[in-house]
Amino acid sequence: MDTAGKSDAYNPFAWFYENYFDFHDQALFILDTLLLHKLPRGSRILDLGCGTGRLAETLALRGYEVVGIDGSAEMLFYAKKRMPEGEFILADARNFSVALPFNAVVSTFDCMNHMMSREELSRVSKNVFDSLEEDGFFLFDLNMKEAFETQWHKSASIVRDDHVCIINGGYDIRARIGVTRLTLFLLEEGWKRSDVTLYQRCYSPEEVLSVLRRSGFREVFHYDTRHDLKMPGHLAIGRAVFLAKR
Image (tube, rainbow, N blue to C red; front, side, top):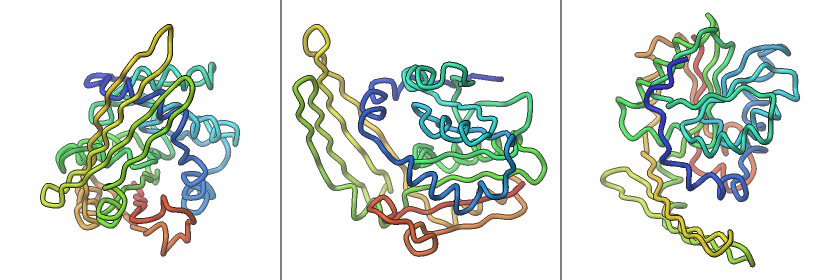
């Protein structure tokens, strides 16, 4: 597997992601609704942007053969700790290839929003297309315009005895760029500070569908999680799911 282009930009974010991000029930709701009933046990699934491996672990327990890819070594540290026998690869979504094709590639929790240009999104889409069996599926979710305009101008803080987290968000409507700034203090033989700035790009459904078609996918579908899939919770606000078939 080619691992050129791997990035450690998200390493400082991994601790916070492991301890406080919990999108996995919603991700499974989406997968159960749209994809997993199409895949028999033993099917090969690539979890692209697998983070700390929580979804990969659940899919493996359901009988799928799962490989995780992430660009952050620290994210994969937690993933390998969670699944010591699991296969996790340090690679960038924009620059990867696989030796054996997969029946499905999934990418959840707005991982694709972190592709900051249509060119980058196209590179990922083409990599995924080349990684799939004929009739294989690519499923991913994205934050859309409504999410950025209603959810991103918020802040929050978490104060515990051994850690403090401060989160601030913002959205540039003209540039269509959302930003999340995290300051994290961890008590580890003294207080240690980490600062992380994460960017996401807002795409229109038409842009995404065009990218998928140009990559070679024969069938492409677009779903609103709240209205089409009836997914509960605030994470459904302004979130869309795209399902493409090779």
